[in-house]
Length: 77
Picture 1 (cartoon, rainbow, N blue to C red):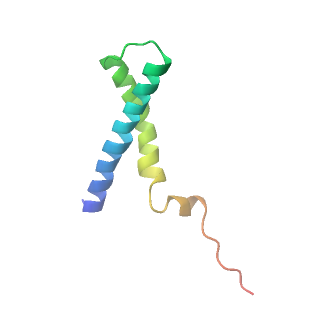
Picture 2 (cartoon, one colour):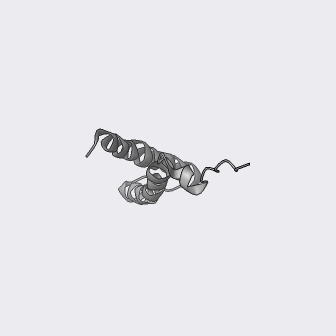
């Protein structure tokens, strides 16, 4: 596995999953009166995981926007 792929996976784990989980835990604690325990953390983690995957692996892919909006070729005159 190349160094770039290892860094990308590490970025996915740290930024996407951990920060997403922390962000969702803050939202749960502010909006609900639920106590934060391991069960709540596990559910928040499971909810944050697919969104972290979409944002870090799919959307941040270098060629993602090229596939969504292909570059226009110059029109011939």
